[in-house]
Amino acid sequence: MKTESQAARRSRIYRIRTLGGLRREVEGCTACPRLREYCSEVARKKRAAYREQEYWGAPVPSFGDENARILLMGLAPGAHGSNRTGRMFTGDASGNFLYAALHRVGLASQAEAIDRNDGMRLRDVYISAVGRCAPPGNKPLPQELTRCLPFQAREFSLLPRLKVVVCLGKIAFDWTWKTLEEHGVVLGSPRPRFAHNAVYTLGGAFPTVLASYHPSQQNTQTGRFTAPMIDEVLARAKELAAL
Image 1 (cartoon, rainbow, N blue to C red):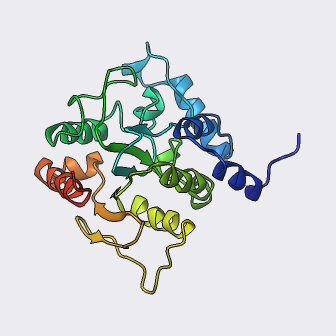
Image 2 (cartoon, rainbow, N blue to C red):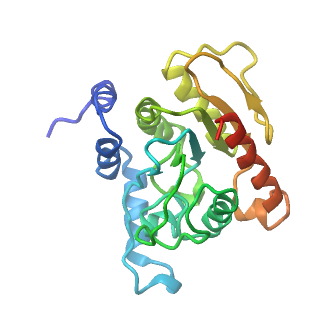
């Protein structure tokens, strides 16, 4: 079987016309053998607490309001969170922290995210990640994120009302700029630097970029990233999006 070239794959993804079509393309992606093997292995072995559950074990599609003005961009699915539940930021401590905050500021229908069939609804928010597969050690390789880049770039085009991108963590921040470069943004030197709650306004049709710490357990359990801090970030995102 002939292997599709990177250029051909990129061109094909850029021709997808709906977010639903893009989600299906993500779910069927096999571009990164290391990640596919790891996600499948985790889904087979499972964590003891979830041994009775069927893991998703596949690339995780984005989730939320297709008319969203705010896009939340994370790093990648968690091995026993999104890789288990099949929905971004669902089923682990990071997701618990994030969805509770979204509910507090009126952007989510409920505070708890358990699985992709729990009835969660988002208002004016779409949740994505720069990597769509759970990586070993939570560290995707640069070449793997490069293969995911067309998904992000196309997603930006298919969110017609997008005004603000909230980057959850430095890696999401850096790769969001790479995505914007795909859309013609020319970055000078030095490139934008990550700083929590920093705002970068590009003007024109480009969305505003808002940087935030990632809601990882390392950040939330040490007090580096608190509930009032994420509430402030989300309130600022709403203001920038004119919600």
